[in-house]
Image 1: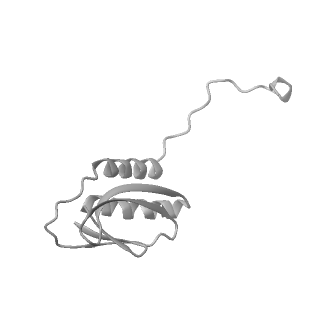
Image 2: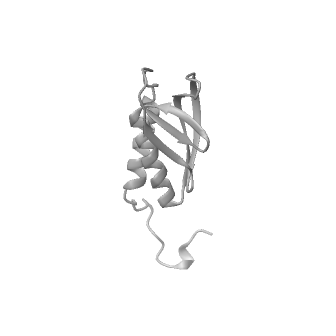
Length: 111
């Protein structure tokens, strides 16, 4: 488990989701983009919570190791989403040509 600090809040989350959140936040910052991510966590009082994080350039986010007997919150869907987004934004698919043929000159355009 890792202690995730987001703004002035602390959350306990699984290692995978914490590491992927940091990677995704850095990628979004480099691209000048933003996204929201929902995840299961434990709040400061140890209660299970659902948190929605807005990740963007300048988002204060930190993860550190922690030792706890609590089971990791189930974030399987979030981990899958983060991996897909990181893959898609890191190596986007190539642009495919349009099926329609381009007009040979300006007069052929349907305006």
